[in-house]
Image (cartoon, rainbow, N blue to C red; front, side, top):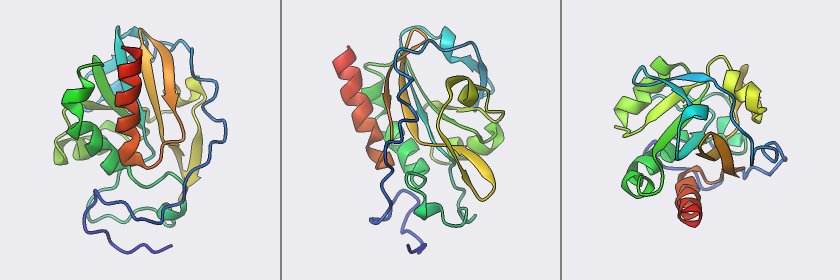
Length: 190
């Protein structure tokens, strides 16, 4: 697979491998979240188990930084590519999402400082949560993979109501269409 530069970091190559459902998220629907505090890009500590109403968390492997190469073979890993396009699709659909959800969050295992670069660069209207110590990932037994010596989360989206996962989307592909699934699911749940 070619690693030719895209015309924009928002573009996705046409020939990305499609992730297959390995059952890694089958256990999530109906799960009550345990109390875990996650640092947000605005410095706030968020405990998803304590949030009332309907909230959305899209979990992604790792955003790139302009001018820094992605890990070797990144485009060959099913579902890895597309974190920034996914984040921006949530930004672009934020007003519609907020008709049905109280809060939207991105979540990855990068540090809040790393995540803040993306948050500020693409002007996200929502916060990104850091699970750098894998506490949330391990507590929920979320699916992960290894790339270039890094353990990362597989792309997964959770709809949480009053601290309970009511619906999940996994595997997510293509990443920039995940928001369409969320909006449709939120409307159905409303």
